[in-house]
Length: 159
Image 1 (cartoon, rainbow, N blue to C red):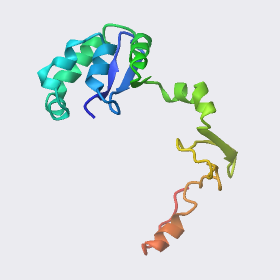
Image 2 (image 1 turned 60 degrees about the vertical axis):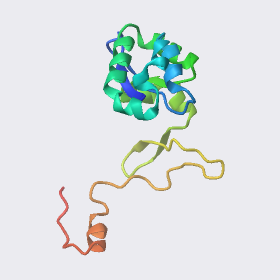
Image 3 (image 1 turned 90 degrees about the horizontal axis):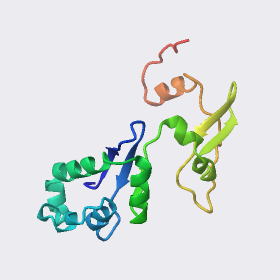
């Protein structure tokens, strides 16, 4: 997607990801958010095909603009235009986020040796609850069965 990329801001430890698709006028909305009203009228970006052709120039404009303010500032501006965006976070930050718990994204079960936490499915269906039916396999637990299934000679499992 031409309008989707990770951009650095003046907040050194954070960048942001912006998804400008799924909008009737993404260039116009992004232009409003970035206070670049001329973006909509720029002939290089008049159609999706031209945006693809001139992607490097478009991204250069975005990069220069995003570098001029904080991630929080730009997230606020992009959200005002109903553009999908998010700060880029470390795995630890994403797992600790309140929304991760609200969305049921972490599941726990008893493993073979200890309690195990795994990332759940981002898709939730009313009639099909996401759950862990069996614990994750241990290292080498199914090697013999897999090799037998593909008719390979058995290998000695590493210990």
